[in-house]
Length: 500
Figure: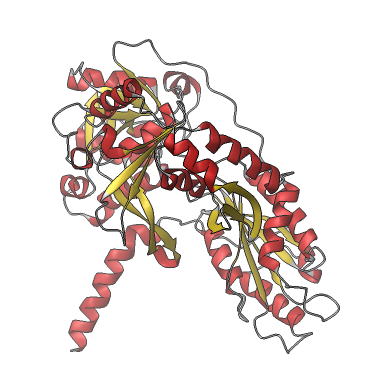
């Protein structure tokens, strides 16, 4: 769980940023508090919110940057929108903003669930709310809300590192850094800092004693070598740099490296690969942290880096991802293959697939060329259309993605029966269709010879209802820009040429 206080401004652009997310279905307004007369309004526009915050903040004109904009983020989907919102309100109360006007917006459009909070740094009494050491207090209060003690956690991490076997002190330091600690050698000890505070110390003499007693586990090294050699033929093992995401879909500084195979090994076997490189350039080495066997190894001891960076997945083993058992059966019927490795995953970016398919119909004179541009293929099985994404290696029924009227446009082109059922929203199936396309356990890997996947689906967790008395007057045409943006750009270019 992380808390990040964003830069302050006098324009309250944080309101526009978050309301734009709600209008594009990428966010949801969870809380809208202490906005006076706006609380009872039927519809509240972003400009009205910003005006209210500006008027509230003008009680103190000496403070130039009056916006208070914060993000609370969890790892993956660890917490849902209601849980994150509750944490955000408790955090605002501890920081002194509970009586101020504020809004909380949930974002689920990234790999980590998070909420944004926007308020004013000026209190109701006209004084600036205390911001002394606020970044340290921000982390401290979040830990209190989560009932976490960072000093006790540090002691547990030190116990864990002492349980590992490693050949150099640098490997032990690397493990501590992966746990989020900043390190500093001081008077024969290794000081561990987190949240801006000293959390614990480790004797360097003790670390050196462990390295001197290191003895390689040759049996485990042999097992890991076989594991790497097997799965690099299934997953892409080449490391690629990971960059810090910035606004406007820009990329910031490189933060590390990852590969498809490394993600798989860490998730399934607890074997973590940490690549070493600089400025996003090709890595020059890597370290293996084997959490299951408590061993830290040099990558070169197990598997040469040059062999990991060599592409081995093409034309070796076919890998197809799918979300429903019926789709797996359909793929086998279409291709007749029996040597494919299937991976069960939840449907990724449903709306993105729908937008691409609609763009194929609207923006391309030839549908087939439009599909090729996106790396998509439409296949037919038992008079039904299926989508194959060759880039993501995902296979799914077209009926699970498109509305009936949208599906029928493709059905007419491929000469398959149209759907005449009552119109339904995409990504939802009812009746017999839902029973035929039951999701299997996500991220589970199997082959065609293995047993069938579980045919039960867990009911969705109860989520908070959206705010009923607040409306942002949201425009529903979420795919307008994606579908027609290029056409508008072409028209602008043509106008410029005609003026010249």
